[in-house]
Image (tube, rainbow, N blue to C red):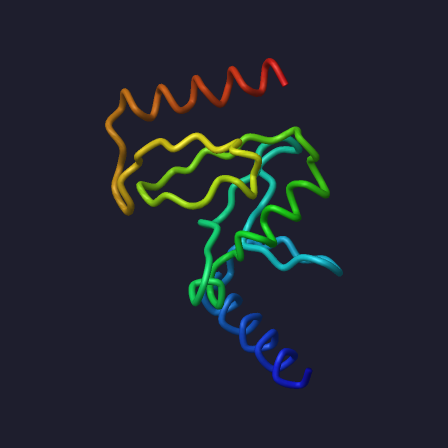
Length: 123
């Protein structure tokens, strides 16, 4: 029990160091690297598993957050080339193939924006 509390505190410290002065969602239940851009649009860090959860959002926590706050009313746009298990998100993930730490081709960026706009219009 004490070990778990220590590890939770270590995770919180690492996450705050990685986030720096960026916005985080923090309440009594969640501490996530995400922010509301609008009431219907969220930007968040990559959902991680394993050792990466010590400094990135835990995929299980992200899934819980979205299910509790936006039950069946969300779609994730994965703006990386990295894949993750979409099952926790009821397969509501669009993989864009955006290369990490680089600008996407303009046609990809336009297509992503159109997909987001269409989803917001119809949901």
